[in-house]
Every structure is written in structure tokens, then in C-alpha cells.
Length: 101
Image (cartoon, rainbow, N blue to C red; front, side, top):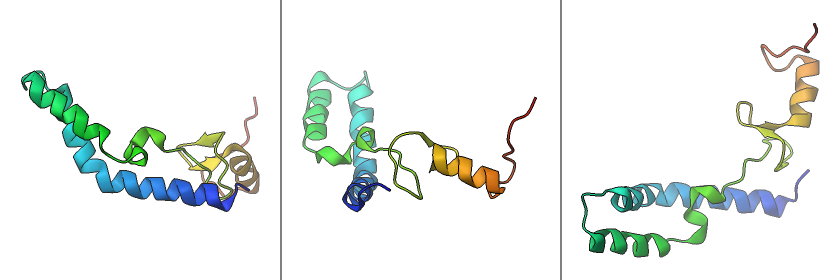
């Protein structure tokens, strides 16, 4: 089980990313738009730098929904590899069976 403070920190980051998502997308679009002048694009870069550090989506970490484990997390299930294994053996995940050939 991950420390509760780390899980809460990640939740705080998710809220910040959601809060600034629209502004972040607009600024990124302005920066990437070649039809805009260099001054506008530069101003957008400066505005992007003024956003809070934790408002960037790249700072999010995928964590297991049960244990909070940061590594070995499958996006499809939102769970860590160990919990997927346990739940699959119990038959709690529909469509997942142990491989045999």
C-alpha cells in the first residue's frame, strides 16, 4: 500500500490538471499555430510557464486504484499487476482467464 500522502498528492494534481485543462490546451494550440505571429506565440509560451507546475498533464502518475502502487499499472483496468493477478484468479475480472496452450 502506497503512503496516503502520495495518493493524496496525486489526487491534488489531477484536480489542478482538470482545472487548467482548457487554458493549457488553448495555449498549446496557440504555440503550435504557425499562422500566428512570433510575438503571439512567444506570449503564449510565457503564459504557459506561468501556470502552476502541477497543472501539466505530464506530471500525473498512473496508480493502482486499490493499493496506490505507482509502477506496474495497467491502463485498461486501472490496477496494479499484482491486484490484476489476484482478481483474475478469483474470476472477478470478466473475460480474463489464465493462459494455457
